[in-house]
Image 1: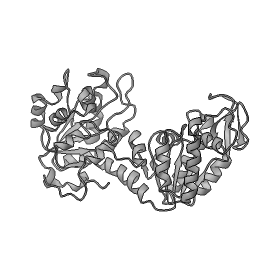
Image 2: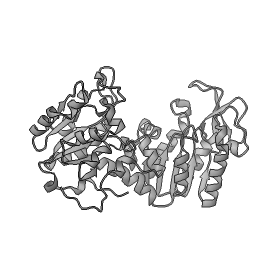
Image 3: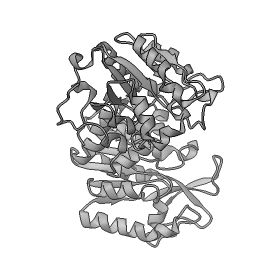
Image 4: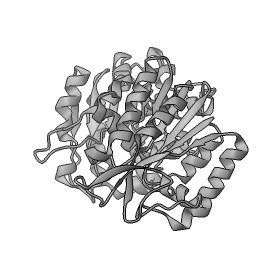
Length: 412
């Protein structure tokens, strides 16, 4: 899946060129429309800085939220001050007001024409227009009309075939990956497909059904598979164990049996927790106790992995050279049942310090390492939710497939 990267383009390719950059600036805003977490803006900065330092004119686009038509609270205006500050330049915002044509008509063309080399123009929320998510070719062509080439740095939406992520590539060449997107591919595709071994995968989350593809794909690649979260009770049930009132997907019991057989056939060491923290209700203040996984009492539900499991998991992880983690070990929103998840986060931070490649595969695992304060210790933290999962499942992401292959010669 090697794709041409923005780093392959030099000053001669970029100076004076109009570059359409699709970023993921979908940051959370509070009630006063103030940014509460600028992680995604900061993640987009290296690509934009590289382009403007090489004299390109950057036409920046992103979505924000899930607006139904033009919605004031989803305008990108609040992003301009922070973006300008991080880039060290003045970004100008062209607010597209009522109609989709305003993003692609003569007014936008005029603003782009006035952009100096090294300038940045932020277009309004691409999702104000239904044609964006429907990937209408005419709309994509109009978006592309103001640019010479295309850079996709929005990994979080790379699994969507939208006008600004896939459609525009048909009209702009070269179409290349930004630095953030490239890093995601290097780790989630490269490091997972050709890992330094032993390679362990830790998969958690409440349901087997949401992680079937990930588990099946990782069983083809990993040496050790550690399972946690609510999904383990379906596996226990498949082993004939009593699970009390824990969450079980009855229709996935046969699948769990099949996955355990596959692991055995492939020589993958599949580890399930040997003890669990059970509670008498699903609540932060529930009564709780630690029991062996073979002795979960009736009327109690498992909400976290126990200390013996943490010890066993840590011993297995100590043997590894590459670890990928996707999904919490328990109900980590409740502090009482966050111990297992936090222990995994701390262990991976420790392993990173010893040279092990540690990859946090998006979603709740990211929140967990941030909560524990070890995010900066990991080799890579994926910025994608659904995109991370689909890549781990071995699926082709439309926004990635549409980009130029690394072997292709670039002509601008």
